[in-house]
Image (cartoon, rainbow, N blue to C red; front, side, top):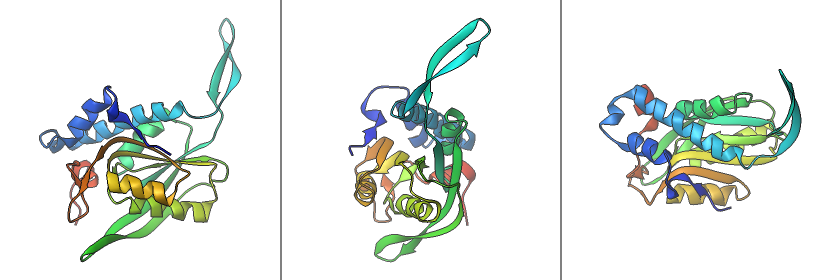
Length: 216
């Protein structure tokens, strides 16, 4: 399915993306995390438009109102650690959602596409639910795909899988869609290139390091 790319139309999302990319603003980790969170709010709102709804009566102090409310169970899945601030934005919107977490690390291989090492995993049952996989950077797409496949294998088949990213490479977006063609993809911006180390160009750098400090 064709990805939904938020920066292809004018909105405040473009301001958040610009600040996430800006090397001067990146010096403030709090600001960086908040911008990821705010981007999560916006993307969650866009995603909510595509969910199933049912009409329900709500009792007010003066009577009864009928409103259309989300009629699906949402599971927010995140690849640790970089995904945490972005995840929080989605959780602020889907505040009754269940949550899943997967630890994934890039293993460098000389002259080849990096391998993915999966570790920590915590998730509810996924059968019949909407799994929203959240990862700020979709570079090669391998970490996100492998984490998703691991969750589905161990926790059951969701009714729908949605991928949400802040910045992606065209190659990463293509890989995700090729591996899981029935999934949906929301992304704030898509950049054309990956460098020789498989980092997105121009991208924004390492979202995990910018959010939480450099790792050893």
